[in-house]
Image 1 (spheres, helix red, strand yellow):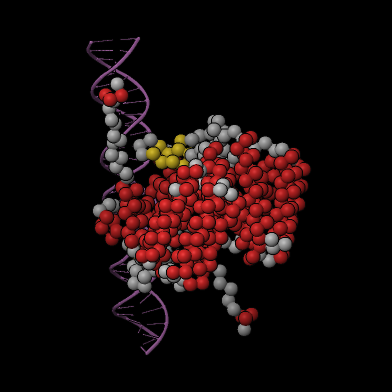
Image 2: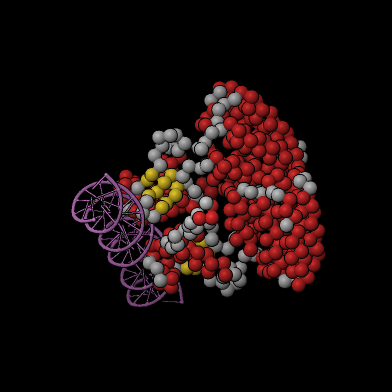
Length: 228
Length: 228
DNA sequence: TGTGGCTGCTTGGTATACCAAGAACCACAA
DNA sequence: TTGTGGTTCTTGGTATACCAAGCAGCCACA
């Protein structure tokens, strides 16, 4: 009987213009490195609506959503401005990230399977290879993937959602962090210790190691990254 | 000279219609106990626009923002629905709250002044008085005020902002938690221990106590509160 | 009696016209 | 030269008209 069941595929939901405009705008802002000196900071509703080929209404709704996420600021009769996060705000975001990920690690020691936890080692290995290549962008990609995996294993969708928004902002400054061989080595050691604690289901230790690891990143950014 | 200075009062900033509509809608939804069986769940744009006395455009923008915050769900050509959080989502929110507040407690041991920390004792006292009165609503108000104060003392605006959104949702279910004398007593003991650890600048202990306290609430809700 | 399609209503999505506040510019007077 | 007043342009805010997709009810026809 089971073999005769129909495989139902959801009807293509064809997102609304608002949703598509939102994605397009977000992508455009993401690709723009807003911390470059010459980056364009002001947007214009009518101009954007022409360039996207949609009317102002759905565009405005997309912009309003971006504003509520903190990516742009809309000022009446002045214009729409891409927001540059201050250094203090970036540090706060890393702090919250530390809080969320350490909680996710705690949950992961109780919820994740053995296979899922040991699967994290693959990300460490990738990360090592990247570190050898000294490509900071890749480093951060592999790094973030490692951390996102831990967050996912926590099994708490809300943590994942919040962390994703944070990563989006933090990623924008990664090109400004200078790759240091020392930090890369330290990270690999940290990550290995984290996975070991997770595999041992050592809740308190896993949580602490994750928190300390990310708070160290916070301190590093505070000392060595120049944003404002 | 100083006595002759003009006292400039900011021009009444007359928020945009969108902002005011947003506040009004949010207040309306808040006052509605959406977990009551007979609570109205469907909204209608045109009806609301008439009742608020604004056109659909600002109303829609307000609704879109409420949707991005998860208070309502907008379905094309079907209607706008007030979202009931599932029990699982409520539990997730309390988990994130635990993560954020424990981090705030950690920060508070380093950032807050002695006076600020000992000022927390007032909230415990108030809270005790309320507990005696066995008024669960007041209990939760005092309770939440205690926790919000800790969060504020962490000095991290982002944590405060995220926590505020969480409290908004969690508050909606407080009327469904049954006041138990045992839990109230336990809470007072917990709070006292937390303040003591904060005053002693015992970072790790304060963080741990806050986390455990809130995670216990989580377990309590999981076991004893019926939502779905 | 049941099925299929027609029709009209409801309702969110989109386009567009108009409004008002501010900024920039320019002319004119002191 | 400087400053003041006004005109114009820019730009987001608001109102409104229209569109199209669900959905329900009704009716004709088999």
